[in-house]
Image 1 (cartoon, rainbow, N blue to C red):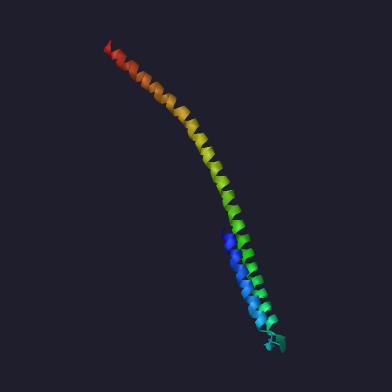
Image 2 (tube, rainbow, N blue to C red):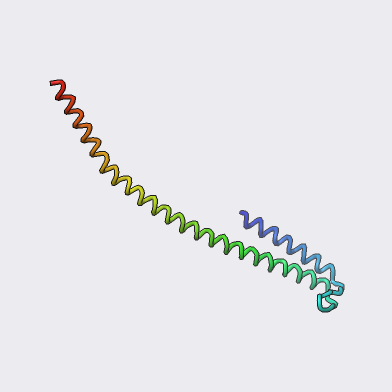
Length: 119
């Protein structure tokens, strides 16, 4: 839905620029750093809008590439941490197998000691 609204706003903006450019067809002087030329205002407006769209697109692509790299790095970090968690859970399970039988044997021994004292 967000993409559709962005597309609608972009199209409205493009229509406004096109109408504005078509209404302004007079030639105007364009001053470059190294010279000056007469250009129709419609071309100046359209070129400026196109240049703005290209710069905006390049910035958006650069940002998307950065975000994709960050996502891949975080996914790799998650995989490593999940592996560490799985290893630690296995170690805990092994330790519980070793510790609990000792506690169970101690409980049995204490029960036998209590029974022996009663008789």
